[in-house]
Image 1 (cartoon, rainbow, N blue to C red):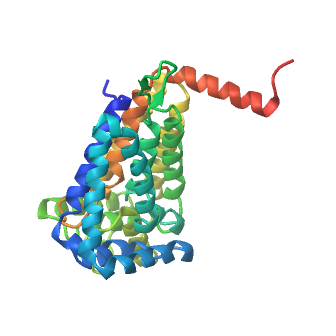
Image 2: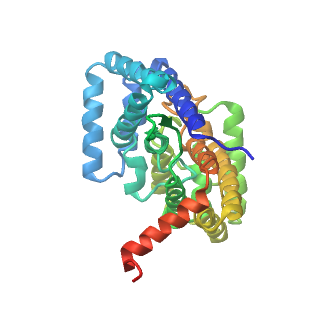
Length: 347
């Protein structure tokens, strides 16, 4: 069974940071396009306290895009190299946490979670926060013999639970709780993509739309004329806003199926080893489908993207959980501690 050890997660995380650094080297990143087509669109529909720092950061970046983007490139490449070198591992993981949180707040707008228009299908909760979580989960500890231990934190199962259970809840929110709205989101992804990927998006959109028995063509839900250089959550917001009033049959049974499936994938990790493995494998498959169809491979072939989006990160998260030793025992001990805290020790 495929799984990732703590060391494997560290190496994978380092490679992802190196990839992000290389993606940041793309020509448009050194221009105002980086802000105008990625950051500012992500601020649409956000609460004021989220939008303000995003706009401030954009303003600062536009003072000199070449210098600031060069710093971003060097920082991300440095984080990857620091994680790969044993002596600088903790520094690299620490920077991964700090920079991941900064990007999540200033670049992704908390993954769009506060807009109410955010789906796992479209890239929620954002890749940057998952970089930070994975770095914390594989933080090395020191044994009594002063030897470094590499163990993946068992609390990752609760992260998995929150992501998938939360994904099910968001699936039920207005503007994204119908097959028609999902189809429109997927179809909008085709903008700016290579012909083969655009064709896949459009075919997938028609398949989703067929579950609602639509008798008319899908509404042309535009995303402000932008190409798919955006994070998935902002695409979900923009398409749901422009398609919310379409008079098509909703196709609620597909939404119910997706919701229940996400709930099950999240909750089953706490039941037992076999249920956990089944849930994680289903989660890996669904994440791969979401990454291909909803996130268009993270926009890696669009020429204007900064990371592979959340799909691969959720897959890494699942494989990391499979690599945790004695997870059932650790969950039992944790459950006992919670019970003792709540009701006290037995007399």
